[in-house]
Length: 438
Image (cartoon, rainbow, N blue to C red; front, side, top):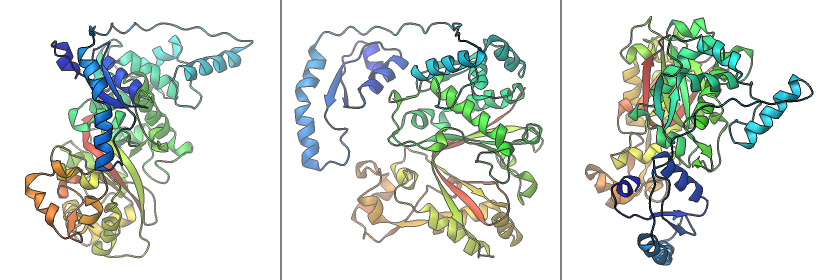
């Protein structure tokens, strides 16, 4: 709509209560200051065909008004330069409290106390990278904010990061700007999407990024994991402008959105490390970003053959509510999945001579779901099913269909401590891996 308006063609954007602020913020982020809206009373979800037609008919007058009322689109103004804010109190503690209250009122925080990004702290953070402070790493969706090294450093300070964490964070921002990551869906969706960072190579040990017990949990052992992941969330909010209710339209939310960062347990990995599989040298430090929709535990304390272990994963992967289960049927959506396999499960699979490719092939052929669950639910639009699968529209409802577009849509990293408990991450987009450069 914005591109049409910029080229002089009038448009009306149809939206509903609860999404008006989001629509206007999206237009601003794409460079348009004003936009004509036709307001619906419902977002057109979970409606019968009759109710959908009634909503469409009721919106007709507002559509006509939007197309005929004079509206002079004006390009959005340039974003203001960084400014220095000052906070006072009876002592420094009170000043910090006032700063946190102010930041929270403006939506700049994640709900936890922020470290004050003073000039001195930001300068120390910038010393952790050789990049120029004014250098632009990415135009970060959805708000198309300029992610300069300096702005990244400010958010890293607020998250509690150390200067040596900066190269990881900068590389992660670079990776998130890759179109394969699908940043707009990760940041804007009504799903609880969140990026996970998977660190490989020497830097994981250098920074003490946890790859074992509780790698995605709290505690001193996951300090680096926590603050690096938290910095990414603050960057998505304060640079990408994805604030809840304004661009970020998450329906319920998830604690995953606070922080998701870990290292692969390369010492316990019986296969090649994940970044080597992606084409990097073993001694190269990398960060992989992947958009997570949901995280499901895979518990198997009994099996001792690859087939039986992987059946536990296959049974976990066929959840009808995950968007990735049906996304592959619509052709234009590449929503892949990630397996965080514990060392115990990985050893069983590898000791029997199975490669990661073998495991992925097994999952693709065994993770199946009855057509009825996709036909009547999920986010599947029958009109958008790819031609080669349209036969499903007339197939028996108990027909078994895959939950992914192919074996390569499953990614595997070895993570965690002892005992057979792993995690299956349903996703959005593709993983993107980049080298971490200081």
